[in-house]
Amino acid sequence: MSRVATIPLQRTMSAAIQHSQQLLANTQLQLATGKKASDYAALGTEAVRNLSTHSLTAQQDAYVKASTRVGTTLALNDTNIGAIDTSASSLKQDLLTAIGTKQGAGLNDAITAAFNQFRASLNASDSGAALFGGAQTDAPPFLPNTLADTIATPASAAFANDGIKASVRLSDNVDVQYGITASDLGKGLYAAFQTLAGAGTIGTTPTAAQLDTLTKAAGQIDSGLTGLRAINAENGRKQAQTETLGTRATDRSLLMQDIISRNEDADLGQVAIDLAQQKTMLQASYSVFSQLSGLSLVSYLR
Image (cartoon, rainbow, N blue to C red):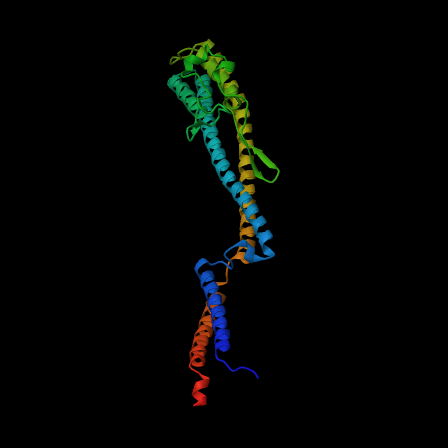
C-alpha cells in the first residue's frame, strides 16, 4: 500500500523555491554588474573568442596611445623647424636689403636674433628630453652659445647629437621613424652663421668685403633652407601617417569592444523584465508553499 505523507511534497516545493531564488539572485547580479556572467567559464563557447578579443583590443589601444604621443612630438618638431625657417628667411631678406641698399643699420641685431632663435629651436626639449638629440636626450645637442663661438667651432664639433633616430610601431608590422637630429636640421644654416660671424661687426655702411660676405651668407641660408624644408615636409608626411594609423587603431578598438560587449554585457531592459517575472514567480511559490504547508492528513481523519 502506498504511503500518504506531506513531507515529500514540501521538499519538492522547497527545491522549487530555491531554484527560483537562484534565478532571481543571478538576475540581480546581472543588474548590478551589467554583465551576463561573473566569469569567462559561464560564457561557454564565446569565452575563447572574448579572451582573444580583449588581447587584440589592448594592442590597438596601445597603438592609439603611441600615435598620440608621437603626434605630439611631430607637432613640436614642426613648430621648432618652422621657427628656424621663419627667422632664417627674415635674416636672408635683411641681408639682401643690406646688399641692395649698402646700408647695414640694425643688421647686427638681426643676425644675433636669428642665431639665438636657431640655437633655441635646435635645443628645444619635450618633457625635459632634448627633442633633436637622437639618443643623447640629457644635454643640448647644439653647443655654441654665441655667434662668436661659431668662428672657432667647426660643424663637426658644434653638434652633440648622435645618429640614432627614434621609431615606433603604430600598427601590425608598421614602424614609423620620426626622430630628427640637430645636425640634420642645422648644418646648412650653421655654415651661414659661421660666415656672418667672420664678417665682424657690420657698420652703418658695410665694407666691400663685408658685402661679399653677406652675399655668400645669403646663398648659404638659401641652401640651408632647402634642406630644412625637405626635412619638415617629411615630418609633415609622418604626421599625416601617424594620424591615419591612430584613427585606424581607434576604429579597430571600437569594433572589438563592440564584439566584447555583445558577448559579455547584459541587456538591461531584458534583465528588468526577467527580474519582475522571477520576483512574481518567487512570491507565488512562497504563497503556494504556505498553503500546502497548512494541509495535514490529520485534519481529514477526524
